[in-house]
Length: 297
Ligand code: NDP
Image (tube, rainbow, N blue to C red; front, side, top):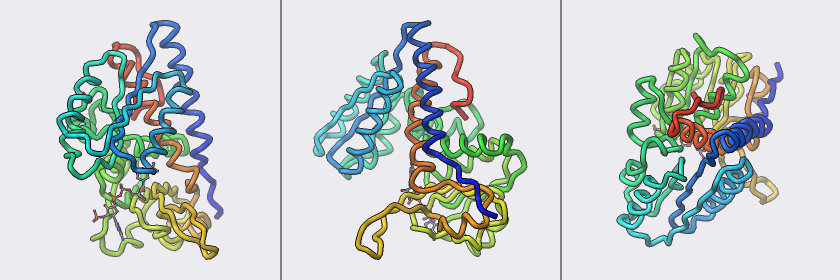
């Protein structure tokens, strides 16, 4: 079998298009413009690239984009004061603090100081609890993007065996929770899992979020399974150049899978699209308006 490629880039463009349409309607019918504030502390080059592209896409869908770039030595007190100000600013519907933060700042404290209703990254402990109990929450963007692609490809996921490799708070655990909420039978694998290839061979859906280049090999994949590759790893090629690869060995997995996401061009573009979708959802909830269909969990 040669897998169907799930084109995350094209699907993300579709999602952003839906968000833009809804944003235009909010403006026309309610004179509302959703606002997303991104806070970056320090000058980590990768974070700067992410923040720039988030800002660009936010304005492209018609939302207000606000960037706060703070010095690497910013004190916790000053950062918390800024978050408090954004929490109380009615023109801001989403607040994202770019991670990782410099070491002197307590990430948990900072994230939990964001108003949960504006926590468009879905990392606030209240949102984690709401998701865990199957209630309406803000859902972390990367797993939400994976879920949207899976629903788009399969329709219902009910009864499917899903294996999530990785148990991080930002990807693995919320991904598993979302699949469980969609009535999959979910296994979470991690670095201590025994016989990982055997565990993965039982899966109709495999989500790899490990951070190990091309770890999942084609002979681990059940014929016809759907493979979602969250990993982003930069490796050196034989020619001394660098290239991006996922956690999945694409060539061998594509021979057995029914469908597979590429890296780049799979999960990555969906993450920012879902950040915009979350900002729209948060705006609608704040104003008691109907939520956009198909853009939430
Ligand atoms: P973490 O490092 O936080 O978590 C990695 C997980 O993988 C851990 O639970 C770890 O297990 C598990 N793991 C490590 N080695 C093995 C192994 N040999 N076998 C099985 N499990 C293993 O990573 P993240 O969840 O933050 O990210 C995962 C990947 O996804 C990274 O490549 C990251 O760059 C990418 N990513 C991509 C995003 C996107 O937008 N596309 C967004 C976020 C992340 P244990 O808990 O036991 O240590």
